[in-house]
Image (tube, rainbow, N blue to C red; front, side, top):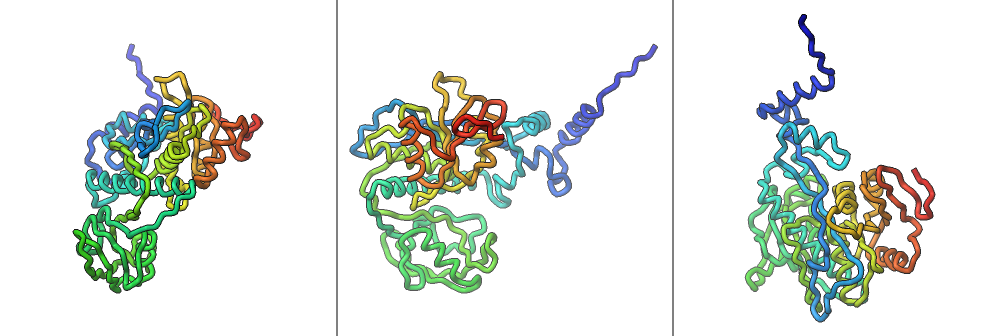
Length: 369
């Protein structure tokens, strides 16, 4: 007697899809949802900022608590099986490859741009921390950190310091960007540039911004040049991007103010920061929360996670592995105040507890959804 092997339709579909995708020769324009066209965003390593930040004339001694920065790991070489597993995981996001590696950019060029963004975030963190502590700072210009793949000119070079545009002074990167965007595409801007310690004028014809039609565009990454009165060294290693700015700023405040902002707790977080101390939204918040709450090598779990207010929706959906208090922040002042409240035994008004397995409780312990 012959026996028929019945395969569930869902399993059969997975097997057929895997077999087709294993060929790896289907253009993304034809089938965008496939391993060759997508990358996986996974929970990444976390780092104790005390091991990365040094400030002159401070002891830099270990505190009772910890400030941890969180990261996202990008898996850009997915086989069919890994791709299917990533899509099935609640802790992993699968996104279009071009979101991480823009067309026309090689991986090393993306890494270079991320390194420039990291350098900018470190400077922003330093300035924001010093401003929080009442130190006055003045910008000296905008330095070219990198040229993008769609740069409209080669007349500007890496390490050029832009100090003026059409006769008006430039003191920071925001001022340089505003000067460019105030001019119509196709028109020219005459930059005053310090190059190899020599002042010169460089005329640049502007292109059109890919993100803001009608606005001028050059295609350079700029960082503000400042005469900082305190020597701050941050060694982020291979970590790139701007999202560690908030945690760096808090670490610098703690070192310069000679106090433990954590109150003895383990505090993780994420968020960009600008010169004014404003905290901006970032990517990968769900993965960062998972990473912070799933450390297998420690008996001190993360008690508090600082998240930009713009990322609250993603944070509420994070499949955390341990209960954690999530604190939304708008700026550095608010983040410091929230940590002071927690250290004093209180709870910030808008904090909520994220529970393992899903679900949110308000700060007082009530169920919030």
